[in-house]
Length: 109
Image (cartoon, rainbow, N blue to C red):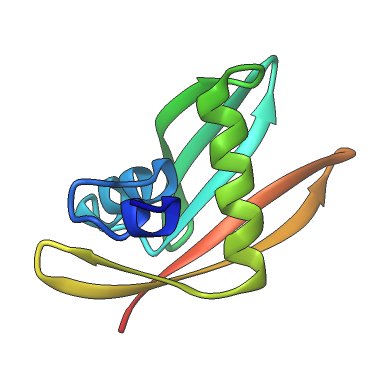
């Protein structure tokens, strides 16, 4: 089985998809990932209100995988299904005090 086939199985859930689904279930319309003090901090954002939903050690493999998935999400819209509803994930980056921050819009398709 090729890597691509493996990615398409129902059992495979990416790190980005896992955190996006958690943010959606908590009512967020955006997911933000920002580096702070050696960690990638993940926040769910609903309107003007944000709250932390996760933290990964920046030097770890999960953080590297997440950064790669976020980069890919800025280049092309990603589609996921959460609790039977389809969502589009569209990422962008911006600069915050010299660090690149990822923000992913979570929109029902």
